Image (cartoon, rainbow, N blue to C red):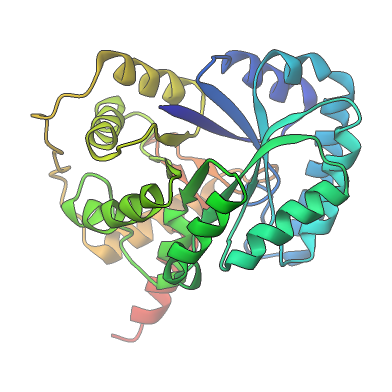
Length: 316
């Protein structure tokens, strides 16, 4: 199992400390220039956050090049067809004067041509990187998954990621399927087979219940049983990375089945709780929120999906 610990870019000292805390031969820290720098209600502020994130990345590469030499560090960039990607690549090129990135994670990939475009633009800018990991996370992308996976394999890439939360938002799902439920796996396992059939490793989306170590362990066990290749797992912090690592070291236990949370909550109650928690949280520096009461990691996708559900059902 390969761990990809996604981390919001913060002040240098904080980011450097998180990177050091996550050190491990099996762990790549992925600094995020995309969703963590997103004000869902203010496009102008989103642009400011992304500009600040790019500046922080280049400063980190210049002042802490030893961190990049000491362990694998990647970057998630904005979709290659959007306006922010060119700015992201410029920042990566500047940082590449002093560091090499383990991976560049390209988002919202919807066509095979975007694989070629992303690689060409990164190489043209002389970005120093070892590989690219595409994320497929929209209805259009999932519909073209076979073509995208084939193009990735032909280009020599090794992995492909499923973006569950963006896909759920694009598909209009509420509640968003949970890995503790069979319906989640009935949708994910065919994707794993498609990705692995192309000769690629599957990278799994994060589990946002940060206090549920047992639940995370069951996900690792399930993936160990389902995947025929070494798989990747996205985590949201050093503690969760360590939990996943411990489960992988113990080995899978096929007899363990997923246990559902018996707390019954209607879709409307859940949507109200999620939106209230998100709006009450401090999101001045990042769009993701760790709810202190529940330990739940609330992404902007979950908030927007809940908000849209409440909007649709307001007149019912």
